[in-house]
Length: 274
Image (tube, rainbow, N blue to C red; front, side, top):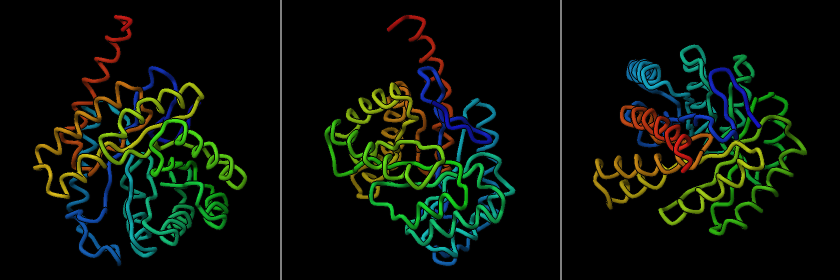
């Protein structure tokens, strides 16, 4: 199965390249001046987007941008700015339901709903949010697997329950996010990626969660966190992840080159029948 959006294809095919996803406007993003009002340094963001565009062309990767917002006002401000400056998919990642719904409505108002993805839904998502998602015709949504479950069977069950409930109100494309939270969940993520891809579900996760949380807690130096993020991204790319959330958009500086060479390695492994 494929979820096809302008600028990127999220595929469950065995040899499909992953879509890399970088985040903007998250808590701690130096570009943001006021998270509540959505005030940010536009010059810094423009320069960052231009750099990512150049890196993407050189590496030959597919890319999307996650917009993280804390309030309705903030998500509206970010989407207004990004709509005309990015042609690739935009993930609407509101911290609260109110922020996400405001994002869905703003995307529809701007006419960009065909390349927007709700990030994220779960079995606990309210009916109101699902109806807003449908009414605004948002193209796709990420379904978060139960982060409290650590066994493969439990996580798969949580996805099936969530997908059934979501599909009753929303008809857009669905992507599965395994929900990695620490190093112990990486092997589980690899197994789930393989299972869901065999079912035809585009599936991925955010290895950056592991690396940058350890950095935030002072357990890793920045270079160590980047090295760990690179290693986990490589593992998940080899496992066949349909998408990989690699953390801050500025991390494209080192992640894109890695992804390029990992794709070459994946092709070689296929030729060697490993």
